[in-house]
Image 1 (tube, one colour):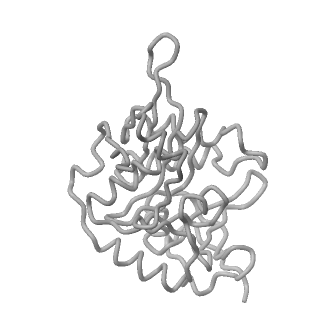
Image 2 (spheres, rainbow, N blue to C red):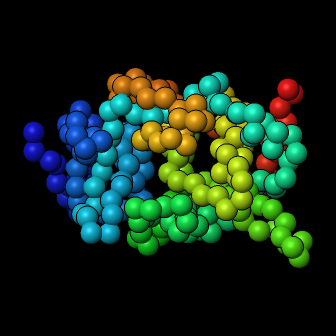
Length: 243
């Protein structure tokens, strides 16, 4: 099966069943990062992912990584940290800073796929109400809040697809993930799309499911409406574990 070449003048994608098995469900190349193309992509379970020397590539992995919110794993160390509540957590108050910090995360040893054009595209999505960030803050030596962790992703109604996260202080990215999970639970959302599995996500409870099962879950989530104020910028609270 040949790889599908997207047209700059047509925002449509081929059926995800056309994605190559290797590598990781590559579906198409080309096109652009126009907001409507991105919205169309995420609505169909497709996302862009490419490096600086690559063409624009679009993916629909099989299997797909998700975290069922009921299976979110909080280990003993994180449980203790949550009880101490060392951080302030906010929603959509520093999206541009979060995506920039994700692009420059110091633990990346393979470069970054969050190129300037990707950052610009997702900032546009954020301004349109489709991309969101969780921020984790800690007061520094002069008692000024400093951004020490966070994540961002794309949401269409009840469907949230996580894109990237960063941390510079212990457990900060985990706090962001826990806060996101609690936020989504408040609107009866059942899972977070993690796209591709890695060790961090697996430790937090992510599992792999078939593309077919993922698409069914995704469609149910997209059909779930959320309140107009759901993604309004504000401070978020994280429940302290009872045990």
